[in-house]
Length: 271
Image (cartoon, one colour):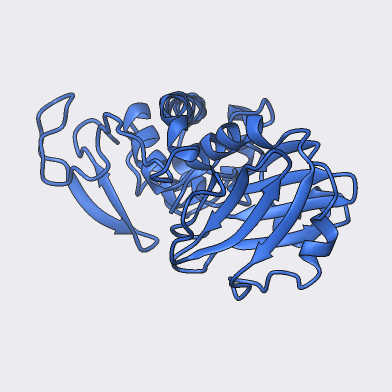
């Protein structure tokens, strides 16, 4: 699933190509996504101008004078800029044709994504209203995390992946941040000390910032012919390395499941 860094990279990749452009037409080939694409969407977007882009958690927003288009990439979706000469592929469900000839194309093989129209302020929409703070914002700090974690028995990994606590800390980045902070993923959230909560917040921010920075070198993927969403080539310390030696101490990394998600950690470095 595209995680926060992949979604932010998508936003940055499409932004220069859409800002200020007028929508000439909208083609919906398949509207049966996670929620149906509104039947009136072509009429709502046609002729309007895209004023801005934003991201909230794993959701993308395109701002227009008439309202916002809310987009989620689902499990395997992508949003990319193509030209009229690019052939339509299977699972290319929606085209937003822009002034100048560029097309913003939504591709979603599993159809778990969505395109919804908002007339209300985005932060009041049910999909966004209950989300926690952005992990790279000042609102997400050690004091906030410590207060939220007080008395909580849930494993700290599951806790930081809860979008009501903080948005966008997906499985890969939770594994990596906990390793960097030296915290065992199965430890109860309420049993993590204030000092270690502070370290965890710092590592979550650092891991996500690095992932976004690496994504910046692959923005061509969003405007080129391959259209790959870019699961970036990163030097992962633990994720996907169960059974291999720890990069810090050499002890064999363990792999367990927490909240139905693969969890890899070092039994020596993480406590």
